[in-house]
Image (cartoon, rainbow, N blue to C red):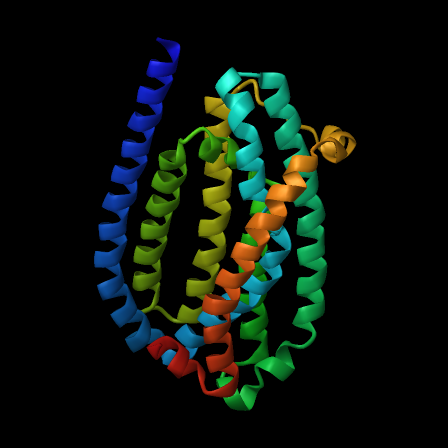
Length: 274
């Protein structure tokens, strides 16, 4: 009887996740028809292509994540099913420790890469002041790092098939952010407003998800110190990480490198067009 109830609960959650994803897919798709037009007309194809290329560039740094999040989600399934709170706290603590190490690595690599931005994006090619490029670059970098230092606990939502909580909050904030960016495109210093809203939206999303996890799982008490002491005990984690990493690498090389090469060797307006 318990197995039947569990199966029904999983099916229910799967359908709920699918409905939420479908609704927001069409909402964001409809919004993109208007936002893309406004961004290209007001901000210009050069700026849209530049920001897209910067985000793809940082995507290669995030490859350092190695797929650990997906592997941790796999390891969490059994203790979640058994409601073993001690084990769940231990596994997510391991993830917190690993993500902190990865975050420090990405931050260090990002700072080194920043030294070469004037060579990658020369003023004569981009048409933008290097200070604006640095502002955009570090805004995107900080937004991506928040998940490694603060928001790693959201993995429990994915592992327990509560993705709709993540998708609902993320997409709602994204829609609000896009609407604000559309409005700010008509203001003075529109580039600064657009980039600043990206940073604010990423920060707000992470904080809201952090509070949601804390409210939904009040017993979740992770410790970086505990994670450091226990991470060597999870050999299966490394096996799954290697498997996921190959998939992530192939996806990034195939999809992420195209915009980067177009931006560097052709032009940033062409990135926007592509």
